[in-house]
Amino acid sequence: MSQLRQVVPQHTIDIILAQESYIKKDTGIPQKWKSWTSKNEKASIILPSTLKATSLSPLDNSFAIKIILNWKSCTIISAYSPLEDMEPTLMEIQDMVEKLNGEDYIIGADLNGHHTSWGYNDTSPRGRAIENLLNAKQMILLNPIDAPPLRSSIPMVE
Image 1 (tube, rainbow, N blue to C red):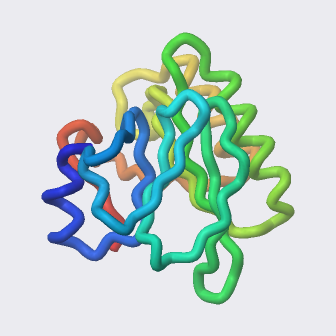
Image 2: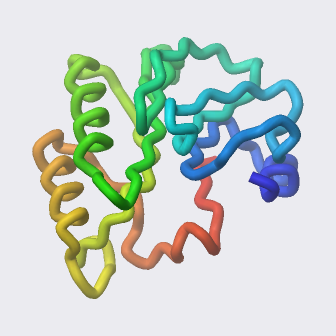
């Protein structure tokens, strides 16, 4: 979170989906921005207060907001899966997506899974479970195979 103070002014950022962010006052969130977190405080959504959003009820491992993108409602979901048990997080994501009834959505999640189709040398059970959800819900993964580890980069959509 401390990197936000440096990164936000250098880029045009509208929405930040953060996992393991541990948001506290004065931790890098620009003034006049608002933030929401999951009940476990490990999944966050941060955006400028000028962007109108409707927050949905926080869940244990995820949080969602609704915004208008290109004149259409879109749900933005941030999720984090603890290493102990990924199933509750996947169920939260699946339940939210099913309730959207075809509405557009974007998910930013830290699920700690490996899969060879994402550029890893192995496929973990977590990776298999994530891939099953992606296939079942016809989701598109936007994590390119050659992407560096997220800890060493800050991926952004501008």
